[in-house]
Amino acid sequence: MLALEEARRAIDQQREDLKSVRDRTIALLGIATVTASVVAAAGAGRSSSAPSWARYATAACIISLVLVTLFVSWPRTIRFTYKPKVILGWADANTPDAEGRRQMAEYLESDYDKNRQVVDQLLGAFQLGICLLALEIVFLLCSLWG
Image (cartoon, rainbow, N blue to C red):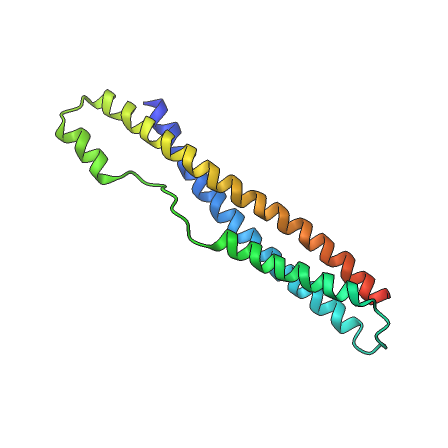
C-alpha cells in the first residue's frame, strides 16, 4: 500500500533530519570555538585596545551557542518506529491486511506530526545558532581591530 510506504519514508526522513540538525549544531559550536581561538591568537601579541563590550559580547555569543547546542542535543521523546503493541493489537483483532496497513499509515502520520513539531523547533534553534556565530565573528573582529 502506497500510503504506508510513504508514511514509513517520511518517518525515516525525519530521523535523518534530526540527526542532521544535531550534527550541524555541534559543528557550529566547533566553528565558533576555533574562530574565537584563532582571533585570540592573532591578537595575543598586541596591546589590548579592544573595547571591553566586544569581548563581553563575544563571550555572550559563545555561551549562547553552548546553550543552543545543549538544547538541540538534549534527548527528546521522538518515535521513529512502530509500537509492537499496536501491531499485535491489529493482528489479534484479525484486522484485514489492507485495513491494518491503512491504520498503520494513520498511526505513523500521527507520529510524523508530533515529530515535525520537535524537528522544526530544533531547526529554529540551529538557525539561531547561525546568527549567534555571525554576531560572534563581528564582535571578534571589533575586539581585534579595536
